Amino acid sequence: MIDPAIRVEHLTKRFGGRAVVNDVTMEVARGQITGFLGPNGSGKTTMIRVMCGLLTADEGTGTVLGYNLGRDTRAIKAEIGYMTQRFSLYEDLTIRENLDFVAGLYRLRPRRRIVAETLANLGLTARRNQLAGKLSGGWKQRLALAACVMHRPKLLLLDEPTAGVDPKARRDFWDEIHHLAAGGMTVLVSTHYMDEAERCHFVNYIAYGSLVASGTVDDVIAHAGLTTILLEGPVAAINEADRRLRGRDGVDEIAPFGTTLHVVGRDAEALGRAVAAVAEETGTRATPTETSLEDAFIRFMGTSQDNMA
Image (cartoon, rainbow, N blue to C red; front, top):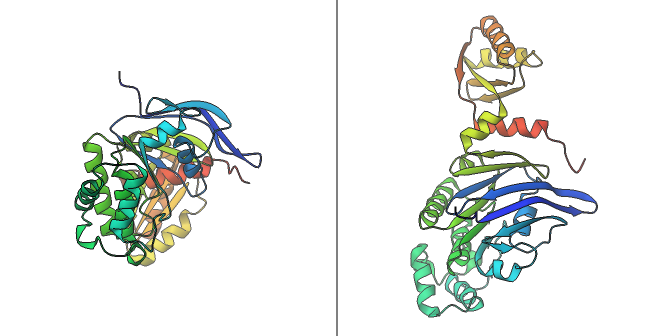
């Protein structure tokens, strides 16, 4: 058996006496894209910083690429790429100058050729002389990714990498991530975008510092134990159905989507009775539908305790 790229056991990190990461045990398989899913403030960034050696855990043990998490931080840093939430390259340097600087830090040889190959691989050659500070969000993102992978790391850690970029840039970015993973790179990406989590091979859901679910997207949805019913009809009828369903037995969540309602609950029988009654009262149509990852996300948030409260 091949050891996982990341294995941590009972990892805990505290700030000011509060456990921002609380007794987390998880693995990241080699060659997979693993999503680290959770709301803002859930501890995702802290976990990633511990895994790449920027922070030291207060409790727990772990390995990254076979190296000891607390002891071998220099070796870990040499073999990973870490893309932070905020653009962290020099805005007064050009794209090529930024990559040349990073290549120098990693002592890459032959430096000029590696920079040129990286520019070409990430579609940056035509813009190589543009100042980084003048780039749009999508192009800054692409430059940041280029800087992270030019030394060919075995593990890529991405902390909410697509925040603030347009849908086309997000899709292009994810196509590139899948290309890197197909070449053998392991990727751990934190996100709170459901469509991005669904593009991962495996998902870990963290809420308020605690790991509450792990598995494929289908596994995580099944773990939530929810039933979802779709209500359809005219806008006025849907608005009235929304009002009447609030507080009904069996109804845990109601989410409007245009002229439909997603009605979600843990008790399938009670939910079915409530929706059937309101559908008849309002002249709307009720049909069972698949529970989404977003439904599960809201469910896990609702059952987790805020570690900062």
